[in-house]
Length: 176
Image (cartoon, rainbow, N blue to C red; front, side, top):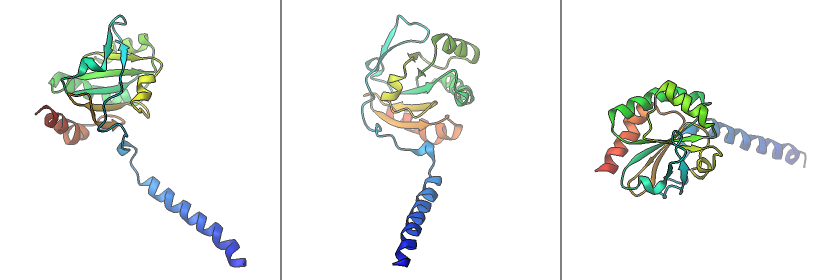
């Protein structure tokens, strides 16, 4: 009887330590999205610069494109932004922005100051479209194919290696 009283808490503690050890080894940028392989959520949002212009998912059909979720208040977005500007100049893939839980004035000021890599940026003030896309936090970038199917999700800032090793090869494959 005495052994069971000590053994059960020790066993529970050991199981918790194993879960903690496994959890610490996971990379949050590699969390799989349940939306991979599924049609991107429907949306119709105003453009940041032109609130009278509404952009919908259907407007992107027929092209492979990136959706970059960003906000002016996001420090990491500022870090990845020069990479997006460079990618836009290379004209390899159209980049659309999803301005997430921001103000229009702050978003416009940010793009004017840092450069605008987006074909257009959608204004998601309430964050509902971001939630529909399963956004954990900003920045996140999605690769969406010609039929509107999400093929890849980058959690966190884009990097040169992520572009070179994963995103651009996938874009080339989807365009062929």
